[in-house]
Image (cartoon, rainbow, N blue to C red; front, side, top):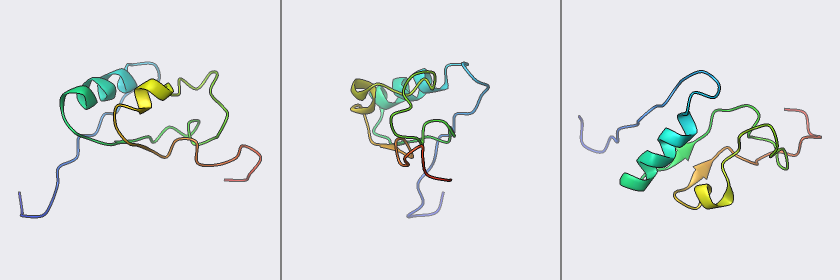
Length: 75
């Protein structure tokens, strides 16, 4: 690995396959940040039916691209 480049762990899988649980388990073991690519999690206030991480889970490490846009906005 070249100096200055960091590694990224990518967790991919189908809906409800445990990706978030795995990411949170990793976050408990090593310092990391979670970047969500779930299209439903970008919307503020859409917590039911989206399996959005809880505030407690999100406190484990920085999370990105969650609750970034109002659902009334076009995206």
